[in-house]
Amino acid sequence: MSFFDEVYEVVKAIPKGKVATYGQIASLLNAPRASRAVGYALHANPLPGVVPCHRVVNRFGQLAPAFAFGGREVQAELLAKEGVICDSDFTVDLAKYQWTEKL
Image 1 (cartoon, helix red, strand yellow):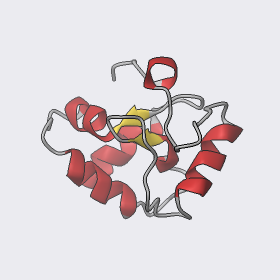
Image 2 (cartoon, rainbow, N blue to C red):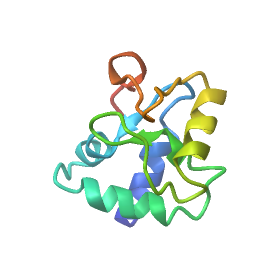
Image 3 (cartoon, rainbow, N blue to C red):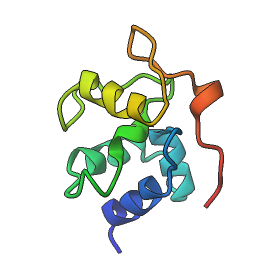
C-alpha cells in the first residue's frame, strides 16, 4: 500500500463532526514529519466523496486556502453540514472538534 493510500485510509476513519490535522495524520502513520506529504495526498484525492478530505485542517485549525475541491468556502460548507462550525476567519475550534481517537 502506498503512503497516499495509507493517508486515505486514516482520513476515512475521521468521523462526521470531527476534524484532524495534517500532522496528526502523519503521526498516526508513524511519519511525524510528513504533514506536507499528507497535504499532497489529499490534494490528489481520487475519491473526494469517499475520502472526506474536507475533515483535515492545519495545526491551527485553519481550513485549506486552496481546498482542492472548491476552496475554503466549500470546505466550510461541507464541515457545517456535519456540525463543525468555522469562525469567520475559516478556523475550526480544535479543542471542540478535533478527532482524538487512535487507530
